[in-house]
Image 1 (cartoon, rainbow, N blue to C red):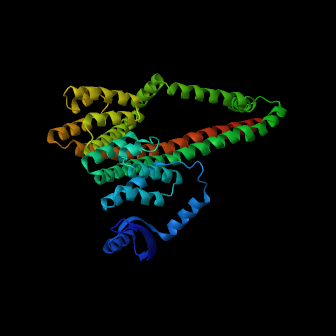
Image 2: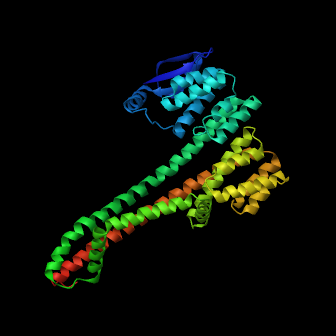
Image 3: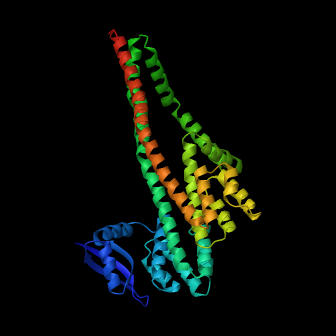
Length: 407
């Protein structure tokens, strides 16, 4: 049995906190429901205290609002409003519960605006750096249709699935990145500290060294002598490329290259199709008109080539065409996705089919990344082994030639 701390509301919307001893989180929630409480947050006491200590020990100055913070806020707001707690009261409760002080102040400002008679969506729109266009549009549609609590639940699910996908991709790439940094660092140490120690020894011998050894010593000497120039050129190239990518032309060519690269192009396409489908499905399901939904999706997708295609699709739909036709002509969407969307339009279940497309390509993306990482790890180890092996063999060849030991 573990001890859990909980924060809940009663039927009047009053905040209640306490501890319960139970076997798991579900048991705590069940007992709270039996006591006519609506749970907002339930956490195991040991884990909560460790988190609290971490929060207390950190400075709140300059604290960033992460997407995870917005996700937690949305999920808890959906729980409160679906339990019958008025929006005004729900925001007041979340102002007290939110651990991120910066977000707490923003929620307080939103609550003040709502209490003063403003629409919830309009109050959120005052903070565009925290709440995206998609977020605000869905809330506005929920308010207009009188289904705000349902829209908030869908929005929380959308943010959760997006966050989980991003975290799964990031975690899969951590090990290859770490391997690259460690291997690259080892090579730099060998070239700048180990190899130079042998340079003077070989020079004193006065003998002609093997070609691989001469190449290695020359490269090592180049790095040691002109490291400042190498670093300067790399920094300058980085700044120039970054500046070019900030232009419309630069971003267009870079995004087009990402779609055309072998293997990576296919992966980029799957990621963007999944993002497009899930975002559009969430907006349409929440009651946002299709043209407005496409305008929002156009601003959210991370590829300017795809964004331009969506803009053209938007214009074609205005002329009365179905969405699947322009998608096919854009040649940026896989045939399977287009056929599924076409079936969804014909059966009147477009949003449901969009979610199925997103789920399918999410799974394919995860599988592709796992396979790439599985192939990348041994390939990187092989490359690092060849580089280090070349360094070691070059040094051994020089030692053997000096001692006149036949190879």
